[in-house]
Image (cartoon, rainbow, N blue to C red; front, side):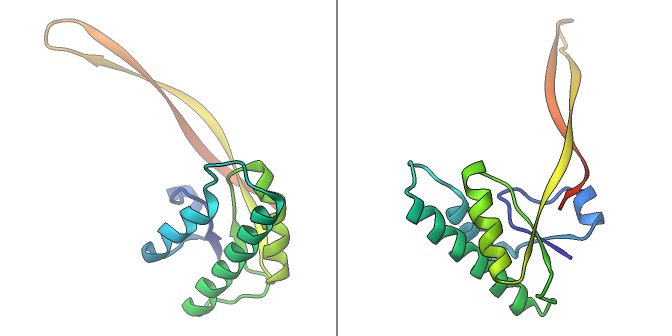
Length: 131
């Protein structure tokens, strides 16, 4: 089992590899802890990392899942990932990072008047985890 501790819902490929999203009632608090709208101090970074690790631990404990060695998928602000990884380790949780390949997809949209537009979007293909 891998707890999804990112701001994004797990993809179908990630779910097939054992990723579980946090319960919907936990998403708002998770997003609040992961989002930095102003330049944070080192103290704020460390405090949020500790709170998030403890929050993940409680989610897992309350769900009845095995805690020691449970993996947690993290992602977000690069300056936050090191402190978060350390805080998770202090709770007996192992941080993993999703590895994906960005693929460009072009879709031609045809209009009734004979004109068309091309929409370009990026699709991220999950390929595994970096542990």
